[in-house]
Image (cartoon, rainbow, N blue to C red; front, side, top):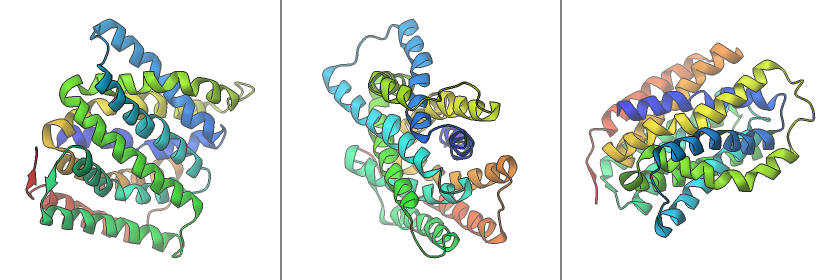
Length: 282
C-alpha cells in the first residue's frame, strides 16, 4: 500500500505539470515526446543490468502496456489539458481505481468481493458526481478524452502488473517506453517547437512528466500492485484526484472549494474500508 501511495504521489503532479507544459508546447509533442525522453534512462537501465530480451509472449504483453501507458494515456491526457483545469481533470481520473480493478479482473484473474466493488463504485461515483457538478452537468470532448485515458491507463496498469511478477516493475516500464519510443520519435519531432525559446517552466514541467510520470513513478507503483494485488493497491488511486487538487491550488492557483474537501474525506473513507475487503487472487 505504501509503494502504491508513493506511485500515486508521483502521478498526482502529472496533470498540473502537463497543464503548464501544454500552455506553451503542442499537446501532441508533450504526449509523445515524454515517452521518447523517458526511453533514454530506461534504455540505460536495461543495458547496464543486462537482463536479456523478453520472450515472445512477454513482448506481446509489453506492447499492450506500451499502448496503454506510453501512448493512450499520455496523448489523450495532454490533449484534454488544453481545455480543462488540472483540478477538474484530476477529479475525472477518480474513476481510475474502478477501471484498474476491472482490468485486473479481466487480465489477471483477480476476483474482488462484492463489498470491495461496492466501495470502489461508491468512491468513483463520488468523484464523477463532483466532476459533473463542476462542469455544470455536461460532459465535453475533453472529459471523453480523459475517460479514454483512464481506460488506457487501467489496461496498462493491469497488464504491467501481471508482467511485473516475472520481469520486475523497472523492466516492465523500461521495455514499454523503449518499445514505444521509436514509433513516436518522428511524430513527436513533427510537433516539436520550432525554437527552444519556450518558457522555462514549460520545459521543467515537460521534464517532470517525462522522467517522473513516465518512468520513475512506475517503479514503486508496479511493485506495489504486484505485492498487494491490483484491485486492493489500486484503491490508493482514489486519493490521487485530491493530491492533484492540492498541487493545482499550490502551483497553478486554481481554487478548491469546501465541497472538494468534503468529498476528499468521503473518498478516503472508501479507500480505508475497501482495502479491508476480500480480494481473491489466482
